[in-house]
Image 1 (cartoon, rainbow, N blue to C red):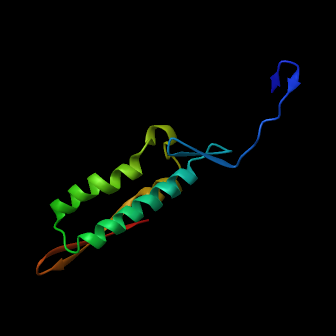
Image 2 (image 1 turned 90 degrees about the vertical axis):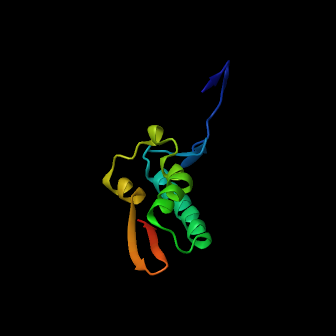
Length: 109
């Protein structure tokens, strides 16, 4: 890059985080998918620690309020289009019957 008569060399980086979105050198969204899934898993763990038994309606509210925003943040920018990136973000619900209510366990793949 030239600045008048001086030549300035720009730094190169492997990945950069800007406004909560990871940008890699090759512009692939894998790092963003991994980090989003990790953050959502962390928040989901917090929800599971504080709510031991939850029915389906309450779980849907908790999931949409606390977990889903981490998975969908700026999805228009990094748009996961590879199958492995989409699978990284998908959630799987496992329900087990319980006398006091219905217990719901969630794993993020």
